[in-house]
Amino acid sequence: PALVRQVSYHSFTFVLYDPIRDSVSFLLSMEAGTSSYMQRLLSAGVSAAIAITIFNPTEVVKTQMQSSSGNTTMREVASKVWSKDGAKGFWAGLRPNVIRTFLVNGAEIGTYDEAKLAIVDYVGDGLAVHVGSSFMAGLTSACVSTPADVVKTRLMNAAGSDQAPRGVLQTAVATIREEGFFALYKGFTLIVFRKLLWCIVFFVLYERLLAAFNE
Image (cartoon, rainbow, N blue to C red; front, top):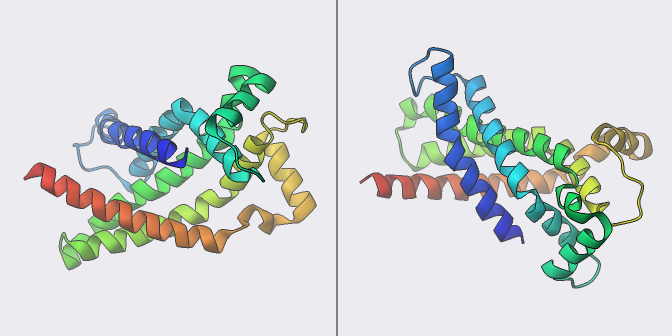
């Protein structure tokens, strides 16, 4: 389920990113490719929000399988959610998921784009700029997305259970009240490590494939 989610959601996000970024530049009467950092963040975030809205069911299934204490299949998890909540159960936690993906992809893609433009004049368009930009993208992403990730996971784990449903704000406030503010950054060290590895591998591979495609 994680692979299905990652491939479908990220692929669609990148399909949308360039057209949305160029559309924002056009609406602001700017030349294509001259977007500001804030416009890149916004364009990447909107692209991700649209993509995850469509593919939220894959996120629900993935999250519940990862949180399950036993061995469960995708079909078993999907059947459980369907029998308890119907179709709407597959869009459980959509609001925090949209917030989370807006933040994480705005930070990752927008920051990568901006960092690359800032660094490329000093080190050239090669592996060094790709790794350096990926590092900045991963660190920024982890910092801004972790609280939304914690809230999203707790809401999705409640789908198909007897736990009383909560909203985004209710869940965040309850987490802080019951466990303290830093509970919103639970697992932050591991998240940073994962984000750095993911961004470096993904963006370096992306740049290599893009260069090969354009030759």
